[in-house]
Image (cartoon, rainbow, N blue to C red; front, side, top):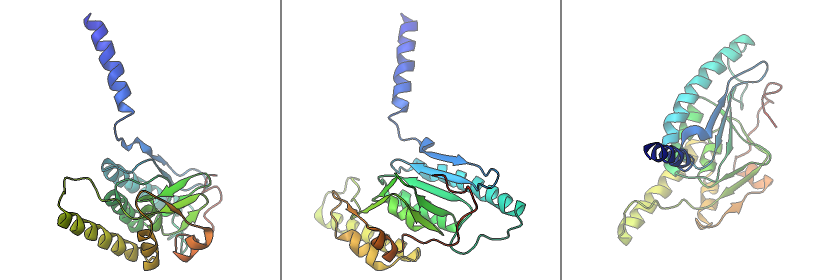
Length: 220
């Protein structure tokens, strides 16, 4: 009887592991040959991802330094970074996105939305952080969600929303993007998505390409 109970518990816990927010959605591929380090962020952004990305980013930074040294390069060419961060996400926690975005910018990583991938909602703050930015997939924007954190009064909700709005605008300015991108975000309700055209991506600064990365750097 006890054996059956333990087996059932193990099966239950194993199933739950797939339901819990997990940092396994952030994957790292070290440099190899002519291919620089590569990070993939896939899925909804949650609080635990900050710690995971911080650790991976530090490893990638050191790996990239060794990669460049092996090729006799002191610094990446303007507009590129020697760590590619591929993103495929419908968004998630905006504070997590901005925290990870600041790490991306600190280390001068490049961000990419590959063909077939999507970057929506809070994910756009990751894309915006790239030293170089490439979009082959789709990018969608809308107003930030107000978090469900127990705030109930109309005055408190208004203050909370204004705070999120101000910090989101400041973040995009910090990343060197035009205020018109934030204005466009605010035009779309949080339960809808505005998909940006190639022209709009360029106008808002979400496509920022320097010289092409080393051959084999960007998996297709």
